[in-house]
Image 1 (cartoon, helix red, strand yellow):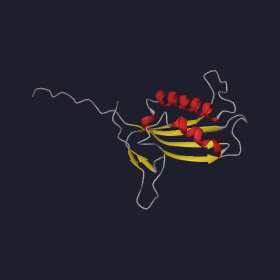
Image 2 (cartoon, one colour; image 1 turned 90 degrees about the horizontal axis):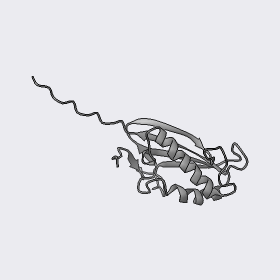
Image 3 (cartoon, rainbow, N blue to C red; image 1 turned 135 degrees about the vertical axis):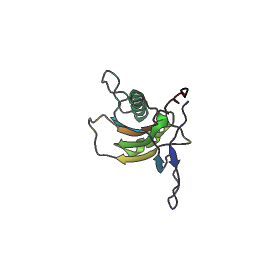
Image 4 (tube, helix red, strand yellow; image 1 turned 180 degrees about the vertical axis):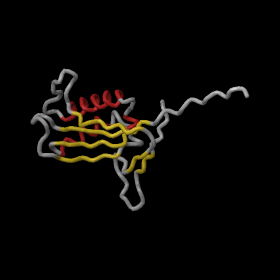
Length: 145
């Protein structure tokens, strides 16, 4: 497992400590932005109509594939933004999220209730930012001299 070079600050001075997210995450590396993911499978079919947990699971699985395509993992995610049509869906979403993120070092997060999304059967959309550490260069062997 690669060592994370991300710094998580859960309780900046003068800010009430967080519960389930980190207030500040920073680190060196390459920024990866993952567009808002929706609960569609690889064929474009909606997964989990009316079921917030099923929609969240499909979204996090899609996000995992997107992160992988950029050489990243959920361990590199520094921020998740949740757009939900009903704030009551948040516990189901977080329950699924907890299967994907390191709960000892969760990403910074924002949850926003919205009036509508791209299609009426969508209950949520989630986007992410990640920082992928740059590879450490291999040492150059010394040459005779």
